[in-house]
Length: 269
Image (cartoon, rainbow, N blue to C red; front, side, top):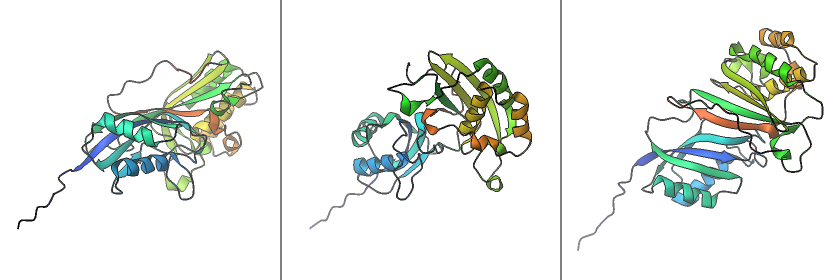
Protein backbone atom coordinates (compact mmCIF):
# COMPACT_ATOMS: atom_id res chain seq x y z
CA UNK A 1 0.00 0.00 0.00
CA UNK A 2 1.41 3.35 -1.08
CA UNK A 3 1.21 6.42 1.12
CA UNK A 4 0.88 9.71 -0.69
CA UNK A 5 2.07 13.03 0.71
CA UNK A 6 1.34 16.58 -0.39
CA UNK A 7 4.41 18.77 -0.53
CA UNK A 8 3.84 22.48 0.02
CA UNK A 9 5.54 24.10 -2.97
CA UNK A 10 4.12 27.58 -2.44
CA UNK A 11 7.03 29.92 -1.79
CA UNK A 12 7.01 33.17 0.16
CA UNK A 13 5.90 36.10 -1.99
CA UNK A 14 6.27 39.81 -1.33
CA UNK A 15 3.35 42.19 -1.83
CA UNK A 16 3.29 45.97 -1.81
CA UNK A 17 0.29 47.34 0.08
CA UNK A 18 -1.12 50.86 -0.28
CA UNK A 19 -3.17 51.73 2.81
CA UNK A 20 -5.39 54.58 3.98
CA UNK A 21 -6.56 54.98 7.54
CA UNK A 22 -8.13 57.32 10.03
CA UNK A 23 -5.79 57.32 13.00
CA UNK A 24 -8.19 58.73 15.61
CA UNK A 25 -8.79 55.42 17.40
CA UNK A 26 -5.24 54.10 17.13
CA UNK A 27 -1.97 54.50 19.02
CA UNK A 28 -0.15 55.03 15.76
CA UNK A 29 0.97 52.68 12.99
CA UNK A 30 3.57 50.56 14.74
CA UNK A 31 2.44 47.46 16.62
CA UNK A 32 2.63 47.79 20.41
CA UNK A 33 1.77 45.64 23.39
CA UNK A 34 -1.51 46.54 25.08
CA UNK A 35 -2.37 49.20 22.47
CA UNK A 36 -4.52 49.22 19.35
CA UNK A 37 -2.47 50.10 16.28
CA UNK A 38 -2.99 50.12 12.52
CA UNK A 39 -0.22 47.60 11.89
CA UNK A 40 -1.70 45.36 14.58
CA UNK A 41 -5.14 45.42 12.95
CA UNK A 42 -3.69 44.54 9.53
CA UNK A 43 -1.60 41.73 10.97
CA UNK A 44 -4.72 40.32 12.63
CA UNK A 45 -6.50 40.43 9.27
CA UNK A 46 -3.56 38.68 7.56
CA UNK A 47 -3.68 35.87 10.12
CA UNK A 48 -7.38 35.37 9.46
CA UNK A 49 -7.16 35.51 5.66
CA UNK A 50 -4.08 33.30 5.23
CA UNK A 51 -4.64 31.14 8.32
CA UNK A 52 -0.97 31.27 9.24
CA UNK A 53 1.41 32.99 11.62
CA UNK A 54 4.59 32.90 9.50
CA UNK A 55 4.46 36.21 7.67
CA UNK A 56 6.08 39.62 7.97
CA UNK A 57 4.59 43.10 7.54
CA UNK A 58 6.80 46.21 7.32
CA UNK A 59 5.57 49.78 6.97
CA UNK A 60 7.36 52.66 5.27
CA UNK A 61 7.53 54.40 8.63
CA UNK A 62 5.57 55.04 11.78
CA UNK A 63 2.78 57.53 12.27
CA UNK A 64 1.93 58.76 15.76
CA UNK A 65 -1.27 58.29 17.73
CA UNK A 66 -4.17 60.12 16.11
CA UNK A 67 -2.32 60.75 12.83
CA UNK A 68 -4.00 59.65 9.58
CA UNK A 69 -2.71 58.32 6.27
CA UNK A 70 -3.94 58.97 2.75
CA UNK A 71 -1.41 56.49 1.38
CA UNK A 72 0.81 54.54 3.72
CA UNK A 73 2.93 51.86 2.05
CA UNK A 74 3.89 48.49 3.51
CA UNK A 75 5.27 45.22 2.23
CA UNK A 76 3.90 41.83 3.20
CA UNK A 77 5.84 38.56 2.97
CA UNK A 78 3.49 35.59 2.97
CA UNK A 79 2.97 32.23 1.29
CA UNK A 80 -0.01 32.58 -1.02
CA UNK A 81 -1.33 31.70 -4.46
CA UNK A 82 -4.06 34.35 -4.29
CA UNK A 83 -4.14 37.13 -6.87
CA UNK A 84 -3.29 40.59 -5.47
CA UNK A 85 -6.82 41.94 -6.01
CA UNK A 86 -8.26 38.97 -4.10
CA UNK A 87 -5.85 39.61 -1.23
CA UNK A 88 -7.01 43.23 -1.12
CA UNK A 89 -10.68 42.26 -0.99
CA UNK A 90 -10.18 39.55 1.63
CA UNK A 91 -8.09 41.79 3.89
CA UNK A 92 -10.63 44.61 3.64
CA UNK A 93 -13.39 42.20 4.62
CA UNK A 94 -11.55 41.61 7.91
CA UNK A 95 -10.45 45.17 8.64
CA UNK A 96 -12.40 47.81 10.60
CA UNK A 97 -14.03 50.58 8.58
CA UNK A 98 -11.35 53.14 9.42
CA UNK A 99 -8.57 51.11 7.75
CA UNK A 100 -8.70 50.38 4.03
CA UNK A 101 -6.29 48.62 1.67
CA UNK A 102 -6.33 50.75 -1.49
CA UNK A 103 -4.27 48.41 -3.65
CA UNK A 104 -2.05 45.33 -3.51
CA UNK A 105 0.76 44.66 -5.97
CA UNK A 106 3.09 41.69 -6.20
CA UNK A 107 6.62 43.06 -6.01
CA UNK A 108 10.26 42.06 -6.02
CA UNK A 109 11.62 40.30 -2.96
CA UNK A 110 14.28 43.01 -2.89
CA UNK A 111 11.70 45.78 -2.40
CA UNK A 112 11.57 47.24 1.10
CA UNK A 113 8.80 49.66 2.05
CA UNK A 114 11.00 51.70 4.38
CA UNK A 115 14.54 51.34 3.06
CA UNK A 116 13.60 52.00 -0.59
CA UNK A 117 11.57 55.15 0.12
CA UNK A 118 13.35 58.24 -1.23
CA UNK A 119 10.96 60.85 0.19
CA UNK A 120 7.67 61.31 2.01
CA UNK A 121 5.08 64.06 2.05
CA UNK A 122 2.73 65.06 4.86
CA UNK A 123 -0.39 67.18 4.64
CA UNK A 124 -1.61 69.30 7.56
CA UNK A 125 -5.09 70.85 7.63
CA UNK A 126 -5.90 73.96 9.65
CA UNK A 127 -9.52 75.08 9.81
CA UNK A 128 -10.38 78.77 10.00
CA UNK A 129 -13.84 77.97 11.35
CA UNK A 130 -15.53 75.60 13.75
CA UNK A 131 -16.78 72.55 11.90
CA UNK A 132 -19.40 69.99 12.89
CA UNK A 133 -18.01 67.29 10.60
CA UNK A 134 -14.26 67.69 10.34
CA UNK A 135 -13.07 68.01 13.94
CA UNK A 136 -11.08 64.76 13.74
CA UNK A 137 -9.25 65.93 10.59
CA UNK A 138 -8.30 69.55 11.29
CA UNK A 139 -6.82 71.90 13.83
CA UNK A 140 -9.35 74.66 14.35
CA UNK A 141 -7.64 77.96 15.10
CA UNK A 142 -9.84 80.84 16.18
CA UNK A 143 -7.21 83.53 15.58
CA UNK A 144 -6.87 85.06 12.12
CA UNK A 145 -3.59 83.89 10.62
CA UNK A 146 -1.37 85.88 8.24
CA UNK A 147 -0.94 83.20 5.55
CA UNK A 148 1.39 85.39 3.48
CA UNK A 149 3.78 85.67 6.43
CA UNK A 150 3.59 81.91 6.94
CA UNK A 151 4.40 81.30 3.26
CA UNK A 152 7.39 83.62 3.48
CA UNK A 153 8.86 82.00 6.59
CA UNK A 154 8.17 78.49 5.23
CA UNK A 155 11.07 78.99 2.81
CA UNK A 156 13.50 79.06 5.74
CA UNK A 157 12.91 75.33 6.23
CA UNK A 158 13.83 74.39 2.63
CA UNK A 159 17.09 72.49 2.09
CA UNK A 160 19.30 70.32 4.29
CA UNK A 161 18.76 71.58 7.83
CA UNK A 162 19.31 70.38 11.36
CA UNK A 163 15.90 69.82 12.96
CA UNK A 164 17.15 69.00 16.46
CA UNK A 165 14.83 71.73 17.84
CA UNK A 166 11.89 70.20 15.94
CA UNK A 167 11.80 66.65 17.25
CA UNK A 168 11.10 64.62 20.37
CA UNK A 169 13.74 62.07 19.28
CA UNK A 170 16.88 61.70 21.37
CA UNK A 171 19.72 63.31 19.42
CA UNK A 172 22.18 60.59 20.42
CA UNK A 173 20.15 57.93 18.65
CA UNK A 174 20.37 59.25 15.07
CA UNK A 175 21.12 62.28 12.94
CA UNK A 176 18.66 65.14 13.26
CA UNK A 177 19.39 66.47 9.78
CA UNK A 178 16.78 66.16 7.01
CA UNK A 179 16.47 67.44 3.45
CA UNK A 180 13.18 69.34 3.03
CA UNK A 181 12.37 69.60 -0.68
CA UNK A 182 9.08 71.46 -0.43
CA UNK A 183 6.95 73.35 2.07
CA UNK A 184 3.80 74.71 0.50
CA UNK A 185 0.99 76.62 2.18
CA UNK A 186 -2.31 77.26 0.40
CA UNK A 187 -5.80 78.40 1.34
CA UNK A 188 -8.73 76.37 0.05
CA UNK A 189 -12.10 77.57 1.28
CA UNK A 190 -11.98 77.63 5.07
CA UNK A 191 -8.86 75.48 5.18
CA UNK A 192 -5.18 76.36 5.33
CA UNK A 193 -3.26 73.45 3.83
CA UNK A 194 0.40 72.80 4.56
CA UNK A 195 2.39 70.20 2.61
CA UNK A 196 5.89 69.22 3.68
CA UNK A 197 8.01 66.91 1.52
CA UNK A 198 11.31 65.63 2.89
CA UNK A 199 13.84 62.84 2.56
CA UNK A 200 12.65 61.63 5.95
CA UNK A 201 10.98 62.96 9.08
CA UNK A 202 11.90 62.93 12.73
CA UNK A 203 9.44 62.17 15.50
CA UNK A 204 6.91 65.04 15.78
CA UNK A 205 8.93 67.13 13.28
CA UNK A 206 5.95 68.03 11.07
CA UNK A 207 3.69 68.94 13.99
CA UNK A 208 6.34 71.17 15.52
CA UNK A 209 7.04 72.91 12.20
CA UNK A 210 3.30 73.53 11.80
CA UNK A 211 3.05 74.86 15.36
CA UNK A 212 5.88 77.33 14.72
CA UNK A 213 4.32 78.44 11.41
CA UNK A 214 1.01 79.08 13.19
CA UNK A 215 2.81 81.36 15.65
CA UNK A 216 4.30 83.16 12.64
CA UNK A 217 0.76 83.56 11.33
CA UNK A 218 -0.30 85.00 14.68
CA UNK A 219 2.55 87.51 14.48
CA UNK A 220 4.35 86.08 17.52
CA UNK A 221 7.37 84.63 15.67
CA UNK A 222 9.46 85.79 12.70
CA UNK A 223 11.88 84.31 10.16
CA UNK A 224 14.72 85.34 12.46
CA UNK A 225 13.24 83.21 15.25
CA UNK A 226 12.92 80.20 12.95
CA UNK A 227 16.51 80.60 11.73
CA UNK A 228 17.60 80.65 15.37
CA UNK A 229 15.66 77.42 16.10
CA UNK A 230 17.49 75.77 13.19
CA UNK A 231 20.92 76.95 14.28
CA UNK A 232 20.69 76.54 18.04
CA UNK A 233 19.02 73.96 20.26
CA UNK A 234 15.65 75.25 21.50
CA UNK A 235 12.70 73.69 23.31
CA UNK A 236 10.30 76.36 22.04
CA UNK A 237 8.99 74.35 19.02
CA UNK A 238 8.14 71.45 21.34
CA UNK A 239 5.86 73.74 23.35
CA UNK A 240 4.06 74.69 20.13
CA UNK A 241 3.46 71.14 18.80
CA UNK A 242 0.31 71.03 16.67
CA UNK A 243 -2.34 68.38 17.52
CA UNK A 244 -2.28 65.09 15.55
CA UNK A 245 -5.85 65.46 14.26
CA UNK A 246 -4.89 67.64 11.28
CA UNK A 247 -1.95 65.52 10.11
CA UNK A 248 -1.98 63.03 7.21
CA UNK A 249 0.81 60.94 5.73
CA UNK A 250 0.07 61.96 2.15
CA UNK A 251 2.46 59.95 -0.02
CA UNK A 252 5.57 57.78 0.18
CA UNK A 253 7.88 58.21 -2.81
CA UNK A 254 10.00 55.53 -4.45
CA UNK A 255 12.43 55.79 -7.35
CA UNK A 256 10.54 56.81 -10.50
CA UNK A 257 7.42 58.15 -8.71
CA UNK A 258 6.11 61.51 -9.90
CA UNK A 259 5.83 64.23 -7.28
CA UNK A 260 2.38 65.49 -6.33
CA UNK A 261 1.60 68.97 -7.59
CA UNK A 262 -1.85 70.12 -6.46
CA UNK A 263 -2.67 70.05 -2.77
CA UNK A 264 -6.05 68.38 -2.40
CA UNK A 265 -7.90 68.75 0.94
CA UNK A 266 -9.53 65.68 2.43
CA UNK A 267 -12.85 67.56 2.64
CA UNK A 268 -14.49 70.89 1.87
CA UNK A 269 -15.57 73.15 4.72
